[in-house]
Image 1 (spheres, helix red, strand yellow):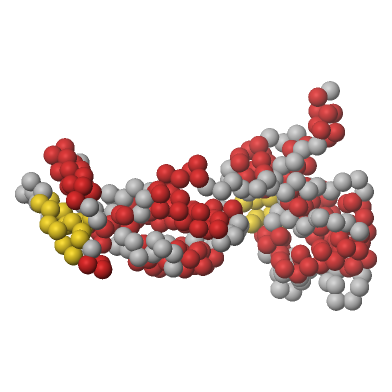
Image 2 (cartoon, one colour):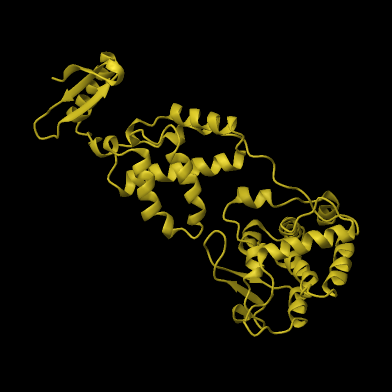
Length: 339
């Protein structure tokens, strides 16, 4: 039988300590605010022991969320390509109201409360999504790799309460914008200290659907001109891929000088964006970002008749959902396919 012992808690408040002891099993002890809660917990433990499905909660109950986050930062984050960006999210969870709570005590309602708190502080839906993704991975890691099999993932219980992400950007090049953009880029490239690369980079982005960082990191040694392919050994999602090259893309390469450092372009990612903004301003084009060219390129691949798997192989999208967010097909371009 379980035993229940009244104790003095913080501030002199009476709490109840439940003890469950069974031969062949480690003693289970936990403290509750009310005797009813203690009895319900003890009944669950005894039932699991009787059915032979008991898994000790001792480690999960003795490990605070902050301690688990510290371990996550040491053991998991270094293995992620973009892991260093998660450190600020870890710091945020550590300083939250859940930081001092035992892992085993964090429930779905606690995560829901954390979501409301983040919304109240003005965090964007995507930032909240990233916070929840890290917390979910932490619980799954603790359960599968750290011996805390008794844990359930509280993030799974609040799927209906997560903030909805805004619709992805739908901006595409319209009318004569591409011609105006390239004309302004040509003028920009002819100015001193411009580097002479913005125009070719814009054309390259439209032809390949590559990300800004992938373009900036290109090296001649990764190009197979005869095979019309570019190897990307490092990508945002951590999976290398080969990008097929169109005739227009190959023509861009033909017009480029070889740099002594082996890089194809001489611009950093932030420099590309800054130059692109100046070119757009000079061309009188509003509301267009460099990343919109990836949306444009992805949409054009579908308009050429390529299938989902073919487009995903080129763009590197891992899920159909993300591929859909990057695709904005125009009826006038689809109409000829119906004839």
